Amino acid sequence: MAMLEVEGLHTYYGHIHALKDVSVNVEEGEIVTIIGANGAGKSTMLKTTSGLLKPRKGSIRLNGEDLTQLRAHKIVEKGVVQVPEGRRIFGTLTVMENLDMGAFISKDTQKNKENLDRVLQLFPRLKERSKQVAGTLSGGEQQMLAMGRALMTEPKMLLLDEPSMGLAPVLVDDIFDTIRQLHDAGTTILLVEQNARIALQVASRGYVLQSGSVVLSDTAENLEKNEMVREAYLGE
Amino acid sequence: MFQRIRERISPTDVVMWLIGGGLLFLVVWGSIATLIKGTYTARHWIDFIIFGLAQGSVYALIATGYTMVYGVLRMINFAHGEVFMSGPYTAYFVAAWFYRTGWLDTNPISCLAAIFLVSMSVSVTIAFFLERIAYRPLRGAPRLIPLITAIGASFFLQYLFRGLYGSSFQAYPDIAMLEGHWVIWGIRILKFQAVVIVAAIVLMFALYSFVMKSRIGKAIRSVSEDKEASALMGIDVDKMISMTFVVGGAAAGAAGVLYAIMFKQVHFFMGFIPGIKAFTAAVLGGIGNIPGAMLGGIFLGLVESVGPSLFLDGLGIVAPYQLKDAIAFTMLVMVLIFRPTGILGERLAVKKA
View (cartoon, rainbow over the protein chains, first blue to last red):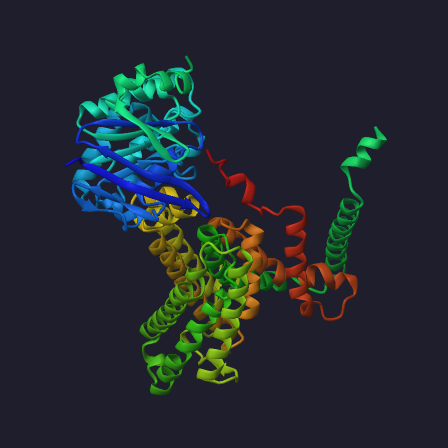
């Protein structure tokens, strides 16, 4: 049994059929990526998993437990935490307050302190800026904050939505180094990326989404070699 | 060159600036004329200022409710004036009972505490159910719809309380402890006004620290900024919206008692004007901004109290104090035209990533 089992998902945005029978599995400790063009349904897929959108059909299970009908904040309590597209940090709160909000569901102060230390070790920049209002951070720092905030509860599963968006290439490398570190520490990650090249480098498996349907799924290695993927997403 | 100026400045702008400039001229001219005329002595002005501060701090407390609800829901809760009315009106019966039994004179402090507690609990309850019943089902509806509902809820609550408690004015009992005056640094200050000002400042400080420092307060701020991201942090957004109404209701209930102490009477319609004034205060300060609402409230109270005599007396207007509401709402219109973001609106707003 896979850790996360998404089966036969159908999600609608009003009348738009955004996800058509999408099934994705993620094993414990894996990095799995979903690649695809703009508007293919990648973000919809993550938002449905994290409970921000409700599917019309299909199911989402974590270690066998059904999450489909749970509201977003309850899904967080089950250990699935999403880092949203565009970072969505709380711009008027300080960096430290943002991290506090990441630990909102946990009242165990000792544990929160340990998690805070771990996050600050992972992102030393956030420590320097802890008292600063988060809206004044640079794009890269905001991405670190968004990830740090999500890690404050030691999630079983991290959903990353376009972590490279809007970042300079150097910073993208930094963020993906961090993703590798998290993976080495045992975090399970479902990664949605438009930058298919870098996504396939860190992931072990991948799914290709095209206008709301999974058209291909394979190991990352095979996907990198696949003719269609190379042409459509790697620009070769 | 001339062409370009004409393109940039529309005739409406010119008219607006003329009206604004004209009003400003009247205010300055009126003030100078009043001061030359010298109808009022320094003592009068000090009394006006203290009354303005007391009145303004009550507005400020009510205004925090408007501004916090606007922050989380981007809607104006026009029934907030009724939340403000419900508390002290209910607590009136408790106060009257304390008065009849004589406890109000023997144990004024514990009686006042009980009156505050009753008033705040009633306002909190009304605010909580108002959100639950009237606003929550309309979450996600176009913005005009909750606004209309708010006005409907406002009428509903007014007539509900009229039905429950009757339509006559009820005189709040006098509290012997708050009669008379103190002399502080040579300034004579009425006891009840001093108590109102101090109590309001303490309450505002408590409310502000709650919003800034507590876990719930931070979560409320997160929700006002980004509901989806808050939900992704495990914050129950609906619960935080309820909490916002609860906190705003508590402030309104406390403000209601202070209002009753100042004006010594309650009535089912008493929430209407203070409610709209507090809304004006919230807009003055920059809606969505808590310190702004507090500042706006105190500023409005001062202008309303000092303004009529200062601006209008010198212009030869016979009963300037009757025009205090006109001054308050003129100010609202001017702020909406010339600085829609309010006094603190733009400066504190942080650009979102």
